[in-house]
Length: 165
Image 1 (cartoon, rainbow, N blue to C red):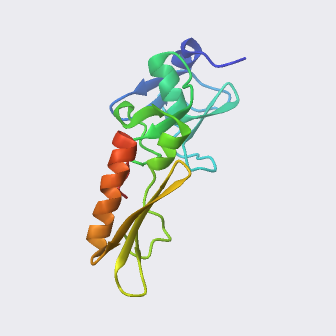
Image 2 (image 1 turned 90 degrees about the vertical axis):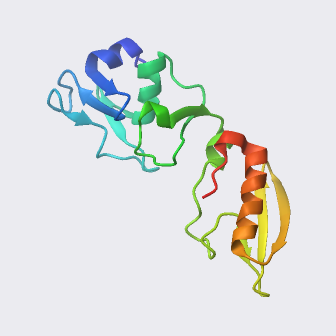
Image 3 (image 1 turned 180 degrees about the vertical axis):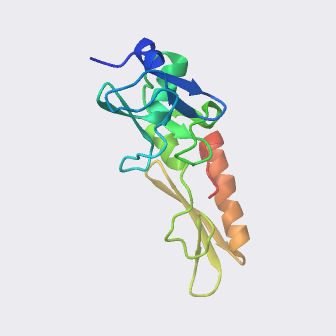
């Protein structure tokens, strides 16, 4: 049986300002009434998990159901990139592509700037991958210039979903 907004609101309260769910009735997991739920247990992708009627749900998807009354059609994107920040103002429905372009700087970055790599000459290349296409944005004297070229193109292609790292 699929979880409904009605059942969700029977079991949990949601505070849109803090992004926190609290238990309204005791569940099968023996969580006490009034206790915060979904703030300590995470799934593989590091999202908060909430148990309702012995079924696990991803907390940000529950927020969508709680507020809008329907399950999201696609993905729920965390605007600020913090997967633990489930405030309503930080969540938006997104396509797979939109969700992916709102990604942080890779830990493998050698420059510390998204879209900029250092060349053997000491100059910096800027490029962006989007929709299966590679945009070569140029070679620059400074990492900041290369990064700015990346940011400008990301804004052009992705609008509000562009993440500058």
